[in-house]
Image 1: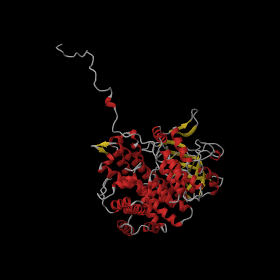
Image 2: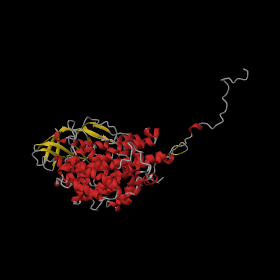
Image 3: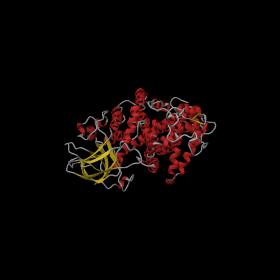
Image 4: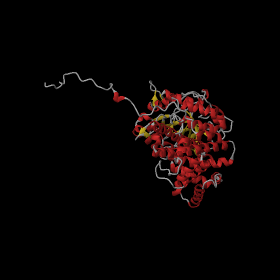
Length: 560
């Protein structure tokens, strides 16, 4: 018809190759494999805090953490969440939690590498530092399985309050063998421990607990009745639990399986549907005639379990620092390979400012974490000065580093733009994890008030803190001025101002460590911004004089 092409005629041949629009350009390659231990702040801190002997092992673990296999384990363990089975097929109560095989692979490596209770059986100075450094690299896989390893580590010093129980259980809690499954504890190759402190009516105010403990005819043995509100990792073998005994709030050891092979009453009512940390099961167990052994004297439950809390708080700081480092590495990888407006993102001055600011925060968190681990290691070996420093500085670090995590992770996610908002990138999982660490083992207010309590009750706590700060006196005028402000706040502070006080404690402590141990580019920028006020209200607002290339070159694997 007049030279027009009919719709029935064959389509003209396309001049371009088929599916040419599907060619992928300007996207980064996969990050894995990479070395999770490639971090100068981590390795320098490891050596400085007395665990240089562990460096080869940390580097080996870092390569394994960054392997494609281990990264996939982390993704799968979160995609396939744990499932609760309250009964077997015949109707018997079993209260078991099933995990994806990837969870067990992560746990097997963590326990074998000494990230659970092993440091308590290691006489080498720096053993606890080595464990913390291991957590800082193996945590690049995923965060959820760090909960049972942390609680197992923390249970040992509390259990030592009852030597006859420690004699039975400590060798198994410090084992490097992961032996899952509910069986008689003494017949296993290794044990995991959990803890049950909070209840629905009280939360952190554990003295309002209503779970009761009734003595039996057997000395030291009680039966518990009550309902716990937030007990993570219910598949563990034993638990440290708080309950009201005749003499007051007390600490008890509760095994899932009793010595005669029968199941203890540990009825898991439900698993929590949490914002993040989804690979890790968190539960509400109910006790009804549950057999338990007293740990420490009656009425001293908080005093008995406080050492456990100190250990798990350090692990919260460690996990936040790990999350910062992991997301910084992810952001740096993306901007190194992504281009916009005619240049790689990493070469854009404003993006370079954001990365440098994040790198400062990450290095400060890592350096403080390892200093706290060094204090813990020396404190358990009898150093009273380090014990006093650990008591106050761990609460300070727990408050501040975990508070910085969510804002940091959000900014790192934004470096990926819309790609970072997509679940496949892994960044949403990290973002959901970040707030948890400020909540577990005492939220921000609880830790801030604990610092005030330490200052008021612990002889030498303030002296230990200022003694540490004095090691950097005269090195930076902004730090010296901040320490003077801190002393003024201490003299006039109130409970309402506790957060302000603890924040300044944390910043001066981080600054003093960086001034003494980090390159001048890092220390100067940190003091100028965090203490000197030459900073905005978001990451990426470092002043024009900051050495962005020096900071980013140190902070990112492979430099700039």
